[in-house]
Image (cartoon, rainbow, N blue to C red; front, side):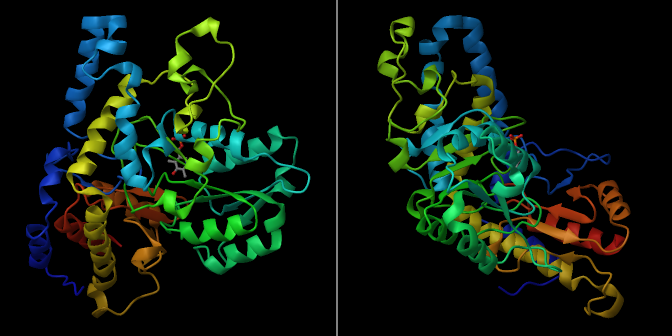
Length: 431
Ligand SMILES: *Cc1c(COP(=O)(O)O)cnc(C)c1O
């Protein structure tokens, strides 16, 4: 698509945007001037859906009114509350409903998945990850390795960007698999890297890793609600995600896990168990049933009874994704919105009519739409912290990653083309 840096063009894109009314469904934080901030931090904490309040209040009312009877008698019975999240979450990741369970938080789910899918042997004990991975994932992985009596120095293999590059090349992932594949127990990759915004080719990595006998887990923290996914068809073994980033379900919201059907229906797999992973038919026989009988679905990994107050906002949020027409519709706008932002960053060079200076901020996120989601990571060569402070003062909410990267994530549900235009102008004025 041909973009124009003209302000009227941005306004026209908004006028033509079939999703423009969705912004109204969210609370927009205001700046000191009383006007909405340019909120580009949805990759960190998504905005609050207005419908979240009502849905949480319903649960509080049901608690007040019914107490223990709300387990079965609430408007949405608490006993099976997690089931209401299953199908909408499955639609977002391209899964079958029996492959999805919304529970816990992300890192906890990663541990639970590794308890089942990282079973190192003498011959096959390594884990392959990308670098830089999110620290929580690295801590989880290293502690699992140590938990099995192994040494991360030997067991952890990293696929790194080459010297002078910032994103990981697909060839280098292949090479790591070729070199270590028969010793790798688990390949754990992000769907979208938190730092660079690089979207990995999950289908390709999965096929290559499984050909060498490795299990494949995907961390979808920055991918769910951002890019279309097809985990079932891609044959991914397991995945985990959180719900407070692009899913807008609020701080510490209930996270999720995907277990491919071929594992989810296998009751023989080792796992860490609790009563809510047990077959509901015998769950309430309590002390009469000392033997754990897992449900033949992803629910078998659920340990405890569902935390209603942190699930309620997720229900509100998932229904907005459905109403918007799902990820394909959102992605069409997202590609345009992010492409427009990159175009503006690269064309707003008032000093010398478009020619790049080495001091200009550089987008390090891959340029191809199929290699990124909505986030652009912008490398700032000169005075990055000062620039970030100036953006904040000008009413932009984005985030700063040490030492010199600003991450900006325009989301298709609530950001506008005109906001992106204003952000690019503020960036150009202050750099
Ligand atoms: C946001 C994020 C996390 C956060 O983990 P929590 O357990 O939700 O605190 C972990 N990993 C990745 C890749 C993330 O982006």
